[in-house]
Image (cartoon, rainbow, N blue to C red):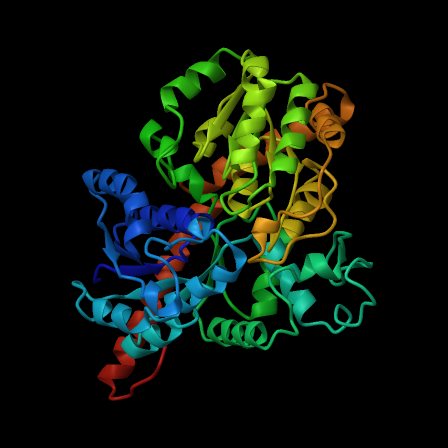
Length: 496
C-alpha cells in the first residue's frame, strides 16, 4: 500500500490554524506524509512545533505561499485575521486567500510523493477545484462542533428564521432533542443575508461542501452523539470526529507554544499556579480576534478585583487608555498577590490543564470550549460573534457546564472591533463567584466537567472513539484511491 500524503489548507486565523496543525501531527503519527500550505507569517508561528514533530520522526512539512496583499489593498504582514485592525479590512484577507488557488496548484504539482488527499478548511471552497484537478479526495474541516454546525444547517435551511419579526425575538430550534432558544441575530452572526456578496459566498461554500468526500470535526462522539449522527444525515456525508485534537500536545514546549510565542514564561506561569490551592483560580481569555473597549476592560478588571478570587487574565489588544487606567489606579499592584495579567498570547492549554484552575471565563470559541471540556473546567460564557452564541447554548443548555455573563446580542463577524454590549463589573463578579461556589450547583457542574474530561481523554487513546475514527478516515481515503486506480486500469476516468 502506498504511503498517503495529506495536504492541509487551514484558514489564516489562530482558531483554525491551531487545530489543523494538531490534525497534521495526528495524521502523521499514523505513518502518513503531511504538507501544510499556508503563508509566511502563519508558518513562522508554527515552525517550533513542526520542527519538534520532525525530530520525533513525523513526516510533516510547512510550505509557504505569498499572499497578494497589495492587490487587495492590505498592508504587508496582515496575513492572519487576528492581525487585522479593523472590520473593513476583514473581507480583503478572504479575497487575497482566494488568489492562492493557482500558486497552490503549482505547489501540489511538485509534491513528492504525490498528494493523496486534501483536508481543507470549509472557508476555502476553491480547494475543491484543486481536488478535482488532481482527482484526489477532499475532506473539509469544520471549526465548530457537530451541535453548532447542525444548528446552523437547520437555521439556514428553514424559512421560519427569515420570517421572524425582529433580530431579538426568541424561538425554539426545531428537530433536535435539547430545547435551544435563539434569536435570529444569534443564529446568523456570520453576516447579513441580504448582502449579495455574503449570499454568493455562502452558496459557494455549500456547493464545495456538497462535492466533498467527508467532514472532519474536532470533537468526540461521546460529547454530542445525537448531533454527530444528525450532522451526517443532514449533510449526507461521513462525519469523522477525531478530537479533542489539543490532547496530542504532551510535552511542556508543545503546550506552552501552541499557536504562537507566549507572552509569559511557562515556568514562571507554572510556578505561580503551583502556589495556588486546587481549583481556586479562574482563567480569563476572550479569544484572539475580539478587541475590548477601554470601558469594557475596566469593568472586567473591576469585576475580577471585586470577586477576590485568584485569576490569570489574558489581555489581548489593550488600548493605550486602558493601560493608562491600570497605572493611574495602581491596579496591578492591588491585585499582585492573587492576579496575573498576560499581555498577548497565553499558553491556554497549559493553564487550563493545571489543577489550580477551577473556572474559565471564555468567549466560547470552539477550541477554547473543547479545551475547557478536556480539562474538566466549568465555564462562564461571554460570546461575541460567529459560532460563539451557539457554542454558549451547547455549554449551558446541553452540557450544563456553564453560566452566562449576560450577552444577548452578538456582533456580526468582521465587526469584532465593536465588541458589543457593555457587561458591568457587578455582573462579572456575580458570575465568577457563582461559578467558583462550593454550593450544590457549582459542585454539580464540576462533577459533570470531570466526567466529560475523562471521556475526552479516553476517546483519543488507542481503541477510543476518536482514535478509531481516525483509522476509519484513513482507511476510507485508501478505499477511494483504490477505486480510482481500478477505474483507471479499466480505462474509465471517474472523478472522486
